[in-house]
Length: 135
Image: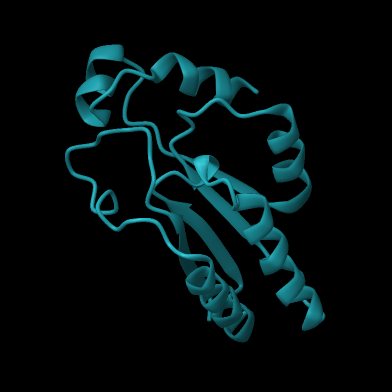
């Protein structure tokens, strides 16, 4: 398998009027472990972790670590992309973790204009996004 997208969480701080993941609820631990086991069976060439907003998932580090372990058990190296809206403050600890574990950071940004951003995202967080992008 070439690519697989994994929705880490449906939680998100934005209120995008077009969002399809906002009503999916929170995944219980046994469910995400099943999905990680399945990813370990498929071992896609590229795994995209998205959401909702994965950077507000309190278990994101644990999930990524478990996924990497599945690849290593098969003597493979994962290529992991994290798809984010970058609207959440990101701790230095999380930045270091991501720098050491993922290969690509996909940032979705609909506009550099505050009014358009707010209209598209349902909330005004463009300044925080720009801070994170510059990091």
